[in-house]
Image (cartoon, rainbow, N blue to C red):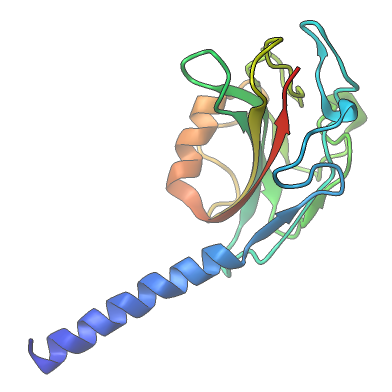
Length: 188
């Protein structure tokens, strides 16, 4: 290996590990849902046989990388018996200066999201938060709450609350600088 090839390889390794360090430094916490713990009734869906409060959890994040222009938050259940999981909450175009969402921000009528943020349709068919409600008797499902640091102010083509979770997810895959996830569990 030539000296210049060696230094190029070292630079490439440094760039890869610097990016990984940036991604690892982002954190997500909630006073309402602890990573790996059971989700309480307050956050559980009210409907489909579930009798929870359907209140979205308070969320806080830190460690977003330089260049972050906006955030998105999703809650996804990969264990839902649909073949494609279940989207419980999709929020995007959260301004870059935001570091938290208050409890019950998922209720569109309360208007608790930062100005410009959009809640789009979930798999319940409407915008806003829809809590856990797995089928009775199923093993506890994993509810992945993820905050994404994005390199754009606004997601392209996701213009309003009718954007599908698939469309938002498509753009998240192309514009994520870093992300952090916590997972809550719920079964009935």
